[in-house]
Image (tube, rainbow, N blue to C red; front, side):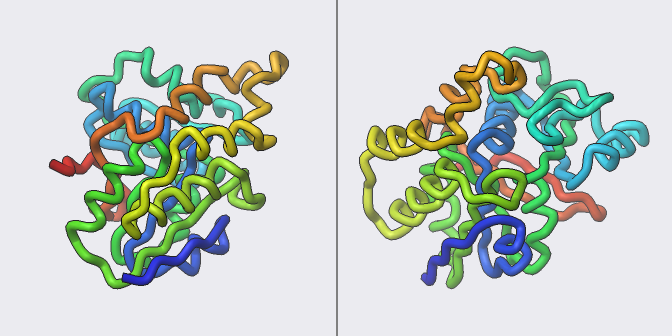
Length: 230
């Protein structure tokens, strides 16, 4: 098993084998909490207008995500695990669009398998991947807007690699490193009301959710669904 760590949209475009697309703050933490809340599935797209068009055509019930961190016009929810975890989404089909996470999934056209990556589902993701014994695993830290590396995604990538290789990193140390990063500061800025402080708290509940999230292409759509690892 060969494990690679790459970053940003360029990394996603070149990814091969079993690919993990990481977006800790906040896309794939939000997706994980959506499934905790009973969402049926999530359709992933790389643009707010695409999401709205799919909803209009009846493919999904709810649009959520962000453009520059902010909920786009016409969306039901933003890119917030706190917001989604306090909403009634049970049995709903969701459509998600973000500038980093979902854009990375769409860009990973050469992947054999795609998993969503975040810290809340890290351990479950590794368990699921190990079952299939892939030869190549490419871990992609999407960063900010898919353009700039960020501590939380890079640390998540390292954490996943360590778990895949049989090591058990200090969770408290991982969290501390992330909290000293500049992306963490957004959640303490009272002028950035779309970055709820509890988004950070929920996203850093490492290994708190017991399922992985795998993406499959069905009828031309990228569909994310939870995978039981037991």
